[in-house]
Length: 124
Image 1 (cartoon, rainbow, N blue to C red):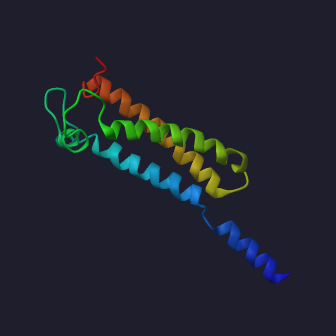
Image 2 (cartoon, helix red, strand yellow):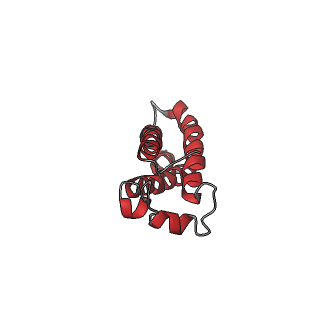
Image 3 (spheres, rainbow, N blue to C red):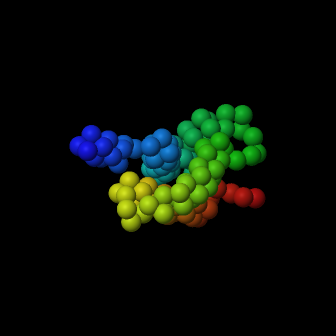
């Protein structure tokens, strides 16, 4: 009986691959979000920053690859949050994942608003 309880306790303490991937994506997004506040990295409406050289080296008229990453990873985070909602009340890791996902969604909206207001994101 004791072995069964130990196995169950170990199972509850482990973090699944889905949680690891979700948290890694959120962490990368928050790092990119923090860098967006540095003009030398993000650039300004009148001057390109390091991100322009790094993520759009050919200077095409399309969107930079980092913006596409943020866009598609935000869609992934949004849908991944719903996977953890059923266990929200029972598991701390589910609560943490939902809260981190929600925090990222708010940060992404701030990023988009700030990009449009400062002129860094220009849709035409």
